[in-house]
Length: 287
Image (cartoon, rainbow, N blue to C red; front, side, top):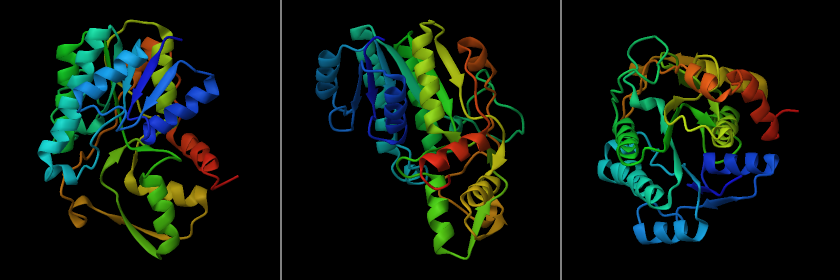
């Protein structure tokens, strides 16, 4: 396999890519953290490209603090838009293809229908807006791009909803979880596998793709499944969004249609609950 450079290599998806690369025996790959692969420092980034001479660049680096982004607009835009543009510009210079990881939060999510890649992106949060701006910057600068939108990422790595629920479920007697926001939990290791599948396919089918696990649930359902599978005894109360106000507005329905990525690259996508079981086993939480 040609050289692969992963930016944001120490984050949740970066660590998931490391795991899959080890399993698949992918050796021609470099994982750069936010220091070695500082996407806001053009000199540092250029030196990294010169050192690695990548054929493919996977950008996992992002500002993902959804609520904080409402107050840190400039920083979120700097990382999610300008950082992505810096990478795309170097991909042109070094003739590399770019895989830009994006989010279901680019959609308003006010209509209960499967979201396709062709539907208009109308974000309702700063996080979603800056991720969309990143998509647009990459697409405008670099023809050889794949934009992969995903949703509700969790894994055995870093901080995420699954690990938070397991911790809180053992600390408290009752938890209130949102029941009227519906999407699809995505095991980051599954997403990592799909990103490598795109690269190994050698297809030049550039454009936007959706990837999440199969199925659709609310955060309440997701939490209940975590507790049931993890054998955590805690009462779960269903809350409406207006009962749990947050700084940023979330899409009410952001279940994505994955037909395009499955058809184009022949990717088989697991059901969300099957992947949750697998993740809990890898996290050494269940046998």
